[in-house]
Image (tube, rainbow, N blue to C red):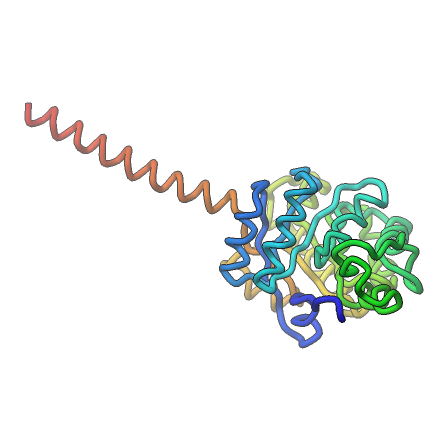
Length: 268
């Protein structure tokens, strides 16, 4: 018996780019819709959303049913906040606001088994096939078939970026433009020279030290991001799609009713 393969890691190791879609709604049906659409990875959020663990477990099942990865952005907290998504059999972790080499080392220690780290061992959960997976295979495969991303979204870690990238035990650096724009005092200025330089630097440094580069984007800048070296792009979010669809329908309705009212007034 083997732990299931990660679709993202398989693509990365083949030199390909992985797609992702973010879920804000605390409902596994949204996760399944994204998986059915064909994304390589679905991103659920525990930093800002705080989903119940039962919902998170259902989200894991929804992605596993369609051979899609589930990435959980964890809150900054105790080691159990990092370990539980993995034990539910999430395929990857995204750790926000990594500020230093010391923090990066601690994250590896908490999320990887020996010899890379000191992640607490259980093996009786979904990721270890409820003890059906051989103990030694479980430790080895958990290190090999589950990914960990460190999110660079502040200016402070740039001072140690090369040292962070050289650290063993994690897979990717994830550049977060939103919070980074705030950290440089230019919130929402996506074309700010400092932000553009940091985005390019994260991708270049990741490649130099054998890590993958991840970020957020959209159809309009996907080619540009791939040219920079990004091999994982999260392309959108459920709330954006739902909001846009609702606004489109409501706008069409209001336009129709206003046109009808004007016509009725003129005819009277």
